[in-house]
Amino acid sequence: MIVTGLRWVSTPRAASNVFTAKDVRTLIANHLGIDIRRVTDEAHFTDLGADGLDRLDLMIAIEERFADVEISDTDTDQIDVVGDLIRYIETLRNGKLTQAISDVSLP
Image (cartoon, rainbow, N blue to C red; front, top):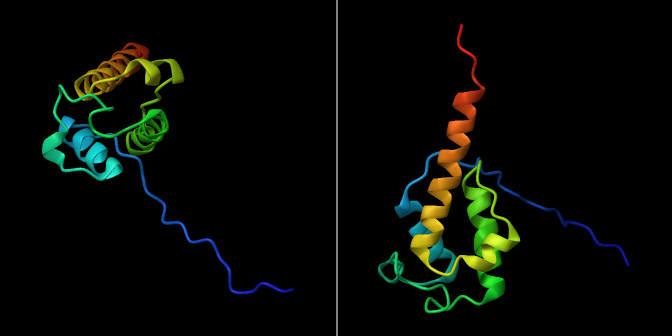
């Protein structure tokens, strides 16, 4: 049997360095297939219909969307609320920015 005509098509996307809470909420809503109005800071991922695998998949999507964000498995397990995720990303990014600034040596 010969298979012809198969090809993998992938559209590369550049990860963004721009972060807004609205971007995270939109990504969550799109990923879970829900109305963005449900994605409030107080919303628990389980209330939004996300099980453990959905949450893991969502964290991977966030890492792909935001270039400098890496979320450990331990942190993924501990982030239960949308607002906590947004604050986690802000803290992580601010820490990396602070580190980058301190790495720059001024003359």
